[in-house]
Length: 549
Image (cartoon, rainbow, N blue to C red; front, side, top):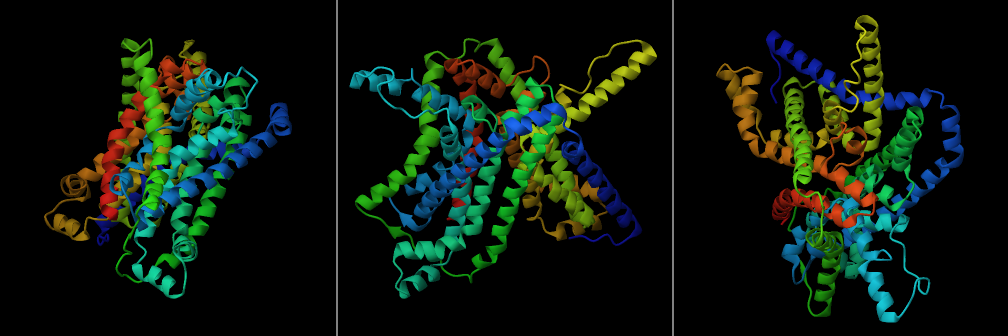
């Protein structure tokens, strides 16, 4: 990379570093605000919450995380091992299709399965008709429970483990399995004693992503009536009007996130065991007969439960009745979603390009630290970010309004609270990491010689970025923008709390209708959210699979 060799270069590096630090402080402010409330007295409201519902929040959250981590690890590792180590009917298309559940938000899946499995749904209605049963004559598991919520998360989040574990299995050389066979290990013993331990860091990384998504969720747990920290934060803020209590709950939720990240880092320390000499990759075992069809069924079942079946249920509801406000109202909702997603994607990509390029040319530890800190935003639940933005925004609004009232005797209302700018700000904190990692990966493929050549032609850093790097990074920039766009379209907690007055999105519309038990009407907005995320996911998943083979 290019080193600043002159006084002008030193000044340039300082400007990039200072700018990066300002951006880092801007991004860190909400988290600092939330953390500062840990030192404030909670009052009677907090004492009541701590004595009554806090133990329930902790127990329910821990139980939900335990179920999810076991489920995603079991499904993700099984499917990853089958497609990486075996050959069976449908393997080639299942390799990329197994990632499709990522396009299905968990709360959208919850709406679909509730309509299918509730008492008045088609499954129980058919069961009562076929068996001649009445209400109370039989037991049927309640989908609106901790177990039901865990099942939703497992179905949509196992691809995190699948993707990383699959790559880890593919990168293990054939010599390892051959060594296991010479030691008398059966295929199952070789898997558990050789392949699985070496893939453990990748599995832990994928499981940690699934756990953080579980902690960040609000729509699923709120719709199912499962009391976790996110539902507690919303209740304290919106129902009780207790921002301090909401902030304290947010701090505890951040502790859960920190624990998950710590466990994942500890697992990555063992990644050195995966550093093996290069060699021929393992030859896939060709499965025949019943084993082949069992493998196909084992891979296709998560795809059906996590994508095909809920998508079909949503399509049936949508085309069978759908949203009665599908006309102008639906267009307005879609336009609102597209507006905030486009604004956030554009700003996030611009900031990511600035931060990544600044760290590259300045070689400053401070700039690199800001980039690493910015990556932590994705691990912070949207509800926590919303609280961290709203508290200082409301205080600033009231201070400005009081000052204007005293000086000019004019009431101006709230300027920042409930504004589009505050909402996009929260999105940036949450999703900048996606754009930054994508841009950094693209920049790593640009050799420093390109910068040296540009400087020899008299270009400064800005001109080099605009005329040399940006054209070469076009694919990475478009990918980053698409990823941020899709994630903003699906985001519910921050949108639900911070959206401007009379500014609903597709995600909010789907949640509101589903909360009113209008599942058929909620299906239209839900299906639109899935459709938006499907196209870039299909393209990206097929590209990733081709690279892995």
